[in-house]
Image (cartoon, rainbow, N blue to C red; front, side):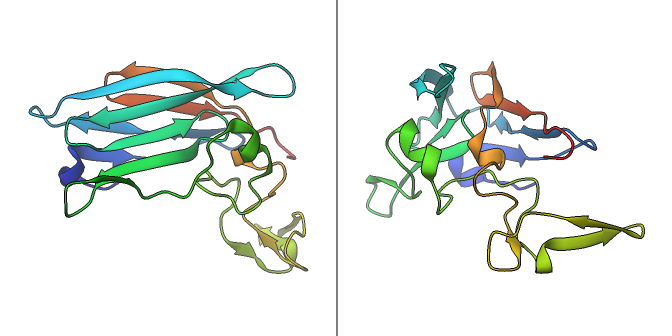
Length: 173
């Protein structure tokens, strides 16, 4: 939970819940004096012909974030610099097809795990679990080829200042 008043927000929450269900919810409570808006546009099509969308949440102060429902990848983050010029401060791609690769994971929502799991294994309650070895003998950021950043999430515009993204992660994936 964080407070970001400079950008016109009073609260931002992100959470994952459930044993086999990952839910990412972005809730932005708008300050009464800040006008905000959400727009939705086509971002392209996946190989299976499902359409991916690009959502833009912006306010009157020049702040805007662009997020695609494909992997909940942040495509762009526009803010004013000290001279008042709007600049994109996020590393991202211009097309959906570039996110199909995204080996460097620009703007990625990483899951199931973040960071490094030594020797690609861990133990919970005496039971040992193994995950993909994707950095030598270790695992980093789950599965770079099949992680949360490479699936189409359900998305819903909540109101004029919030978008909710939801993905159910099947067991054994």
